[in-house]
Length: 254
Image (cartoon, rainbow, N blue to C red):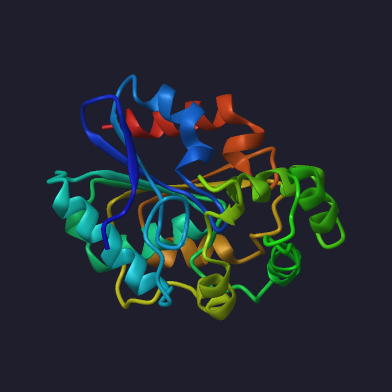
């Protein structure tokens, strides 16, 4: 699958993978900072953004999508950074293809399985009838019956756009996500470990980590550094300056 991407900067390649219901757009501001030192590739994963859609949706496929992207663009030992679902893709890729990357950065996700917890979001998005939708305000009102947090709704509704015919459409494949939501909660799918330089950044107020998760991290990523910032799950959005400084400090280590 040929993934859509945005490229900025030059130098050692840094591939950034967004989370579930996200896209490359979410990382535009941070990409400008990282592009001062690296060649940044913001990638839309399958069924998201402007990348192709598929009825199949799981981490082995997304790891292969990433492998194909690296080969197609002839990228030599890229750094791979992923948030949430993107972090799961990055972890799976690193364990399966440890010689294809130089460093790994995982943002607020652990190498374990998670129970389904996005069902209310899917219900809310699927409850918006695009054939009769008149405005984004109406979409926000409908979604608000399922998702009370305004900032989360704002993030989700970035996927709503008008077609050239003036109708509303989604930039995410809601059907595929709904059909495979349990697979998106899965842990690392491959045997083995990644012993390269690794950074885990987690939010102190995030509910994605539990006691014992640090041990799970170090079992699969024995050279992992673990840094905690005072945020929830959206570390890079809540503390962008601190996040960028943490990433760059890690990347500048020998």
